[in-house]
Amino acid sequence: MLTILEVRGISVSDSDRAFIKACTDLGLLDEWVRRAATATSVADLFAEES
Image 1 (cartoon, one colour):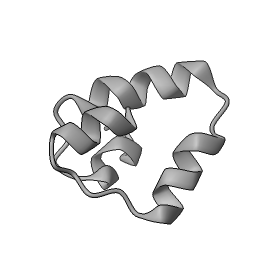
Image 2 (tube, rainbow, N blue to C red; image 1 turned 120 degrees about the vertical axis):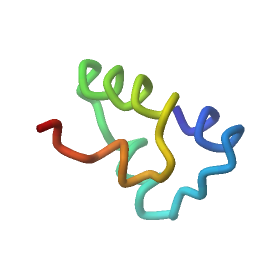
Image 3 (cartoon, rainbow, N blue to C red; image 1 turned 60 degrees about the horizontal axis):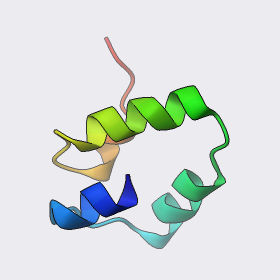
Image 4 (tube, rainbow, N blue to C red; image 1 turned 180 degrees about the vertical axis):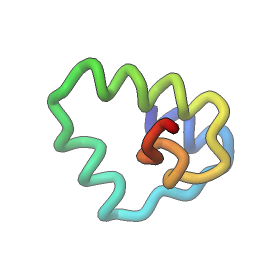
């Protein structure tokens, strides 16, 4: 996911990078990867679905 964000030119703060790397919930990581494909910012990864 971090690679996807990097390739897409989306900046990831050190704190967000640490938060992502600390996640052990595979379902949540999968969701974040899917969101990274269309995200315009890191905040889009963590946004609650409505």
